[in-house]
Length: 146
Ligand SMILES: [Zn+2]
Image 1 (cartoon, protein in one colour):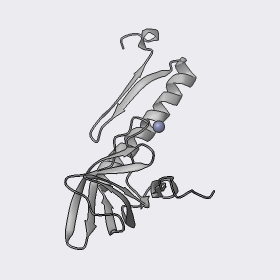
Image 2 (spheres, helix red, strand yellow):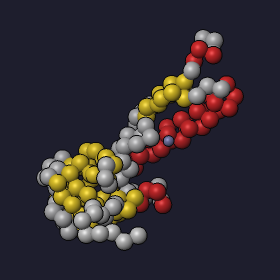
Image 3 (cartoon, rainbow, N blue to C red):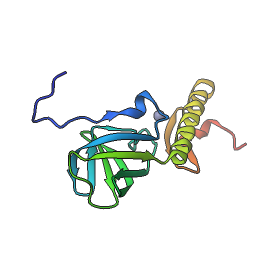
C-alpha cells in the first residue's frame, strides 16, 4: 500500500511479531508536546482490557518516562514532559515485569472465559487486568454460591 503525503505515518507494532521485545530503536515521527508517535514501537497500547505498557524513552543523555500508551489514528506515547522533536532517534525500554504480569493475566482470562463458556454456557461480560490482580465478570446466576 502506498501512503499519500497527507496521511499520518502508521507505527509498526513490534509487539505483534515478537511479544518479548523489551528494548528497541525507533525514530520520532510526530511530536505533540508531551505525546509522541514513533515509526515503530514495542510499547503495547491499552486495549482488550489490558492496561498500557510503561517504561522509558532515551535520546542521548535525555530520558522520559512513558506514562501511557494509547491507540488512536496510530500509537501515541504519553511522556512525563515535553517530548523530543520529529526525526530524533530514540531507544525505548519497556517495563518487562509489568508487561509480563499483564500478559499472564490476559492469557489466563481468555482460558478461563473459554472454559466458562464451553462447560457452563456462561459468557464473559467484562474483565479488568492490573499488574497485581485481574477480575472477570460472567453470568453467575447459574452457579451456586460455592
Ligand atoms: Zn484479549
